[in-house]
Image (cartoon, rainbow, N blue to C red; front, side):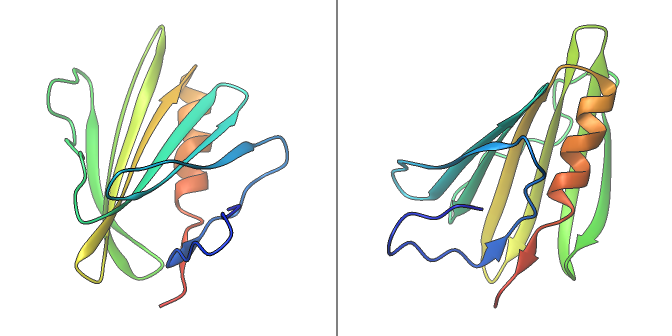
Length: 122
């Protein structure tokens, strides 16, 4: 993921061709936003987050898994007008929270696949 000069994040993510974006200003977290056809994912790394799992999302499924050996939860909901993906990965007392909007179930699958490429450097 592109980084601002001097910014040190404890993770990297494989960005497929056609994905654009990078860091944006944050208050108490390191924030990045990436966009690709049918996908927008916001990354929020810091002490606070907003992961809500499947709360208030009909037809949502949530699962626990490991991403690069770290505990993670991923929630996905899709419908005829698109879907939403959210994830939380625990990192040394902090979290990486991810929120994604998807134009279709296939776009949500691509967003989850991208999230699963996160690799931690510490």
